[in-house]
Amino acid sequence: MNNEHLNELIGQYLKNFSLINDENQEYYKWEAVKHFQDHWDINADNFSEMFKESVSKTSNLINNHIVQPANGIVKLAERPELTEEIRGLFKELFYTEDSGNIDQRQDRIEHFSDAVNNLLDKYEPGKWKYRQELRSVLFYLNLFAPDKNYLYKATQAREFMYCVEYGDDFGSGMDFRLSKYYRMCDWLVEQIKTIPELVQAHKDRITETMFDGDDFHILAFDIIYSGVVYNLYHGIDIYRPTKANSKKRAEKARIEAAEEKLSETTNELEKLLADRSMYDVFSAVGLKIHHRTFGDGTISVQDGNYITVTFPIGDKRFLLPTSFTTGFLKTDDEEVMNVLFAMSELDSKIEQARSKIHELQRALNRVE
View 1 (spheres, rainbow, N blue to C red):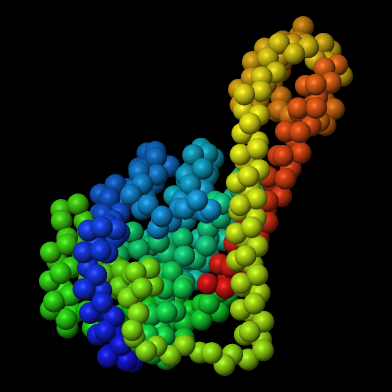
View 2: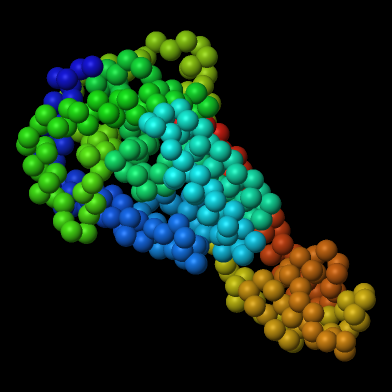
């Protein structure tokens, strides 16, 4: 391990402490943990609301504009038939004793993500943004037991590994080993404890709104994270592997291509969503329609993508525009049908873009 490089990094961290802490408010990590600790209750009557409130201060640690795994948990837990199953998965994840065996902990994380994703496939099909990955489940564990776990982001973790010349590469994707990453973080925590200036600066940062029982585990991640985000490695002579074999070069090219495609598809999705939003003002209320079984009727209510049609036998509810484009409902108004087909085409393209983003995100997460 290169302690000289670590000392340089810590020096930069302290030099930029005001930028990191005051201007960019990175202290929110400790506030997020405190909020979770104050609101978590595994036996809460309304589990979905309790979970939603518990993670509400996590900012972009778990959810962001592309993926929203915590929202996926809420969606599932809101279903009465699934609430106890989700509660049980959290009981297993949080309360199973592993005596510090990190390999067993990683198995538990992967079991949790697989179980939740299976439920999402069944009850929220196509909602790729709700998918659970190792990183998101690891965040849940950190919120629950921050003194026994470490937050993780792949790019920042690997750059720190290169900086301090940690020799036990923890891998990436399917080959990622949590135990090796935790050993590196454990070493960092022990080094932190030997630097009085760093310990004091951190203690001065902590207020009553922040968690203070993590044994410097959150601080360890904050240093790892800030190294990349705030360019703290500038001036440190870091060796980064450059003579990769052809397989590694091909993998790098594949990753770069996937990242570029993800960016392109995300931009495409945003444009499609903007185009689709133009139809939000469209109203079919009052439209005369025909159903092959129920006969003639009139659209009496429109609620988002759902319409209520009043037939002689009573009211029936249908999905818009699918009920027209699939032929269940018909109208002689050609202009309205053109609008409905345009909406349907956009919906199809949006779903295709979302599926592609999901596929690319999963591929990149496996690499991370």
